[in-house]
Length: 557
Image (cartoon, rainbow, N blue to C red; front, side, top):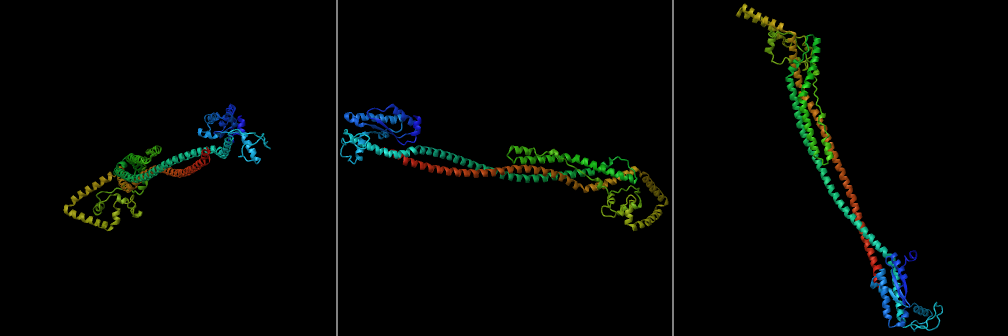
């Protein structure tokens, strides 16, 4: 039966159960329609109680029997099959006589008047049934009810086709549209929330980016000011330390213990090694005096810079990288004093000169007092080298060369002075004075040993080297400043680069949020458009359902 129903009944618009009015509904008939109702959600069923003309023989029970049949049919449609309501079921049950209708229709086909009374006993030519000899009482009502059934059936057949074909589809369509509309509504609300969140996040990220850039600019300015002050301290410290070592240069030179010999070749070696000794020891002492403080200053500045730059970023990983980016112990200041080149022009003067000679006395009286080393750096001040041969010329040769007329007058003056003194004090006193003068000369001449020459050499070297070193104090301190500046600027560049990388990350984040906002805006617009289309489609389906399915069903009843 299931197969037969699947083959022939699934696309049926109306089902008509023709029952025998002389008996009740058969269980087989009920089972069939139960199967049909399982296959079809709401089949349109009419029940025709045929042979109702037999009730004309029991006219006193006809209404009671009709009511019993009607209640059973209504109960079957409403309670068992549940295909309609009780009010609708009354319009789906009819009591007719097919034989009477057939006889009347046959008579009409033969051209007889259908309203002239019941047909006679004549045989209806062409009829599949024999002619009815008479019509039972009430045949007009049964004929009218059959005509009503035809009218209702015709109307229901056309409208039921619409309901049968489109009701389920319309319901499914409305369900799909409602579900689709709910999905679009959910998508719309979700994307609106996500878009608002993305806009807020984008605003926060942009504000964070601007804050990072502003703080980086302020940090750069603060670091520049800090570096300027730090470099000034380093420069002043190096200059002060070098000046201290210059003032103690005599101790450093005295500590040089190589044997001294006045031979020019040996003196040349002595000077070269003395330059090396002074250069090495000055560099070591300057490093000892300044290196620790400079390293502490660099470490302090780099730590401050790392803390300032780390406070700019919010990402913990980036902050940790910044705090571990610089190694303060990697820097080591270098101090190089090129004493070999600085003292290359040094010319010693270790020839004996009597301190009370007339030339010396005249030079002391006529020339302003100045350091003996001034004579030895005249070559670097522009005097031709032919005038400077201090290893051969006596100490007073410069005065003699510059003032020959004075020197020529001094000999005459000496004779005159001796003559005057001899007359004033006598020749004996003059002889004693000359003896004392000669004794002093002899004492100084005998005291002019290698040790005295070494002392004079070192004193001249200290005067010359001190003057030259003072000339490079600014250069040395500036060199130390540049070393520290290069180290700190390199550290600042690394730290700023790390912050810039973090800033670039924020820029990419803002760009990604902009793209997300554009994408969410498109999704929101599309979801809104589809939701509106779903609303329009739902209105169309509801109007179709009310017009072609719901209203005809109600009107047919």
